[in-house]
Length: 188
Image 1 (cartoon, rainbow, N blue to C red):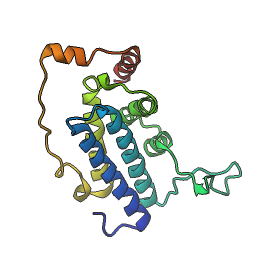
Image 2 (image 1 turned 120 degrees about the vertical axis):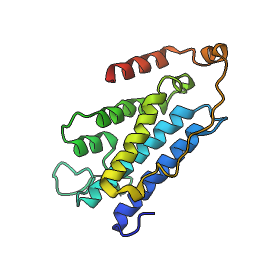
Image 3 (image 1 turned 180 degrees about the horizontal axis):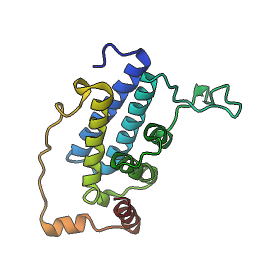
């Protein structure tokens, strides 16, 4: 998939693309109730890996350093890579754009979803989830070229829309879901 790239760039880019495809597959599976949750977790992995690929391509080592700034921090014997929030900060360098805001919306949401099950969010954050994927493909194209884009690999998912009564019952929100939706409304 990513031939001709240095190995560390190739590995990160392949992981990013695979994670993004898995996120879409998870979201589009009919019987899955953890659609948004699985999608968000996998897309956060995809974005983090994409940023790592970009930084490696640019000759930047996306690793945390010890306080002495000489050695890299280690966790469980492995060098500690930058997490998504740090990658966003480094990539956008103070630029306040829609893509950055979209990614930043999902970081605390991912953290909440690791500990809660909120299927009622699906209908309320669909547009933001779609934007997260479109933005991902846009940055892939910008940084690596059209040959690496996912858009040719994906199609529209077929959907059965429930009756309005079933939909209303299905998306009756818990207080946690209401707080998250209010947060996303304020972000955009």
